[in-house]
Length: 254
Image 1 (cartoon, rainbow, N blue to C red):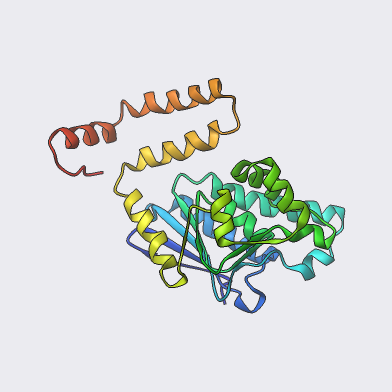
Image 2 (cartoon, helix red, strand yellow):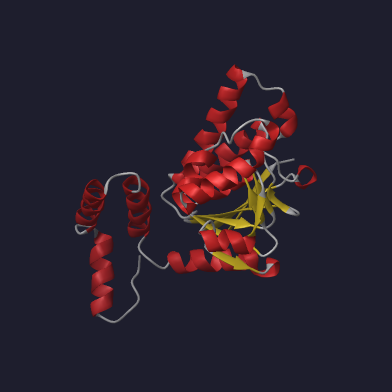
């Protein structure tokens, strides 16, 4: 039985972490399955966007603690590299990915959500990086992505306390984009993607690249990243169709 299920509807893939009995914990085998799914998202021309969510009452409640307890420095390094590699591939996708956080997003689950381009949370969702309670630190990018999303001070408090924060607090600090009621979570995530997919696919990919590649540069260098992508887009068929459609007062045909 697959631990990561994929369904596709109208160019949007729904990726379901499906280990509800373990609150969708991230074992090495789950991460490898997720890596295969990400490769499909990268290569399948029939997929233009994705939603990642969890089965049952958790999004992902963390890494598999039984596996974690057996790690030594060498195997710990390999496990961190596996998780970081999969999450970085999600972050680097040229197709928009939304985390639909339906419940607990703790440890590796919070890290997975942060690797997605956007996060929509159920009002019942809870977030946290509780690794310090186990005597370790986040290993899949949590210490790096969290400060970039919410700022250094708030991120440090979350990381050092190991406590959980509710969805409304996650919204206040900028960790999530929206909070909605559980019954409309997936519909809302898909509606956002449907609106995005009305736009030019190259422009969507270029916006993702500009944000990703420019974020860690100084403002002068990040402007150069943007200008390079903008100038390349100006010679595209997509640009010609978009501007022509606007001037002709019709919908573009991307």
